[in-house]
Length: 189
Image (tube, rainbow, N blue to C red; front, top):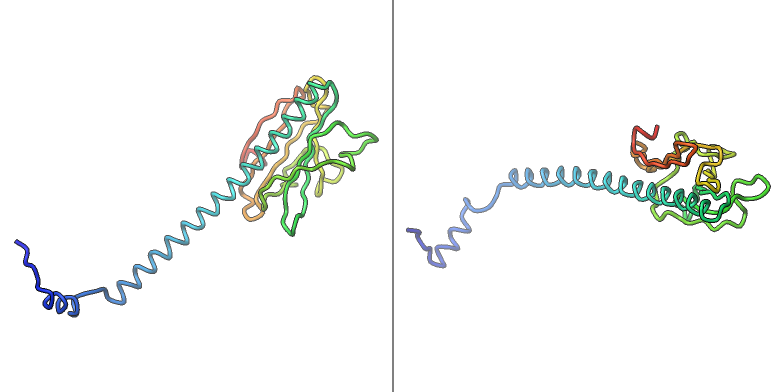
């Protein structure tokens, strides 16, 4: 049977030297919690970067499919174009789907660019092989003819994180028939 302490005995018991934790025990707990917080934050930030690059890959894949679909529906050459842009001091990837521009331009001057709303995602120029006149700055494009086949070019657009260049996602136009697929990490190099 448990012994019940009277109120004044209870106060004496709580104030005695055996109650509480030592400074060493408290420091140990604070250090352990700090280490776990650092590890958790690093994992969370890595997950967040992968999530942003995955979403940008999905937007690029949708843009390429849209260009292919419009080419077959309208029986014209359509293209998906990509570029990097600085907006309010942050780097963004932009895309546009439009008909083949006249006079050998890569993109028309009056194009309406759509922004992929994930800052910190950039085009990996070393691993992007879509057609461009300036490899390091873009814009990059892929064209489809009235049958939905590529208009004589194959390639891929590779997206990566500015903070962690190991995170790579790409969209690959891999056959002249216009087969489009996506890949990640080592398969994008």
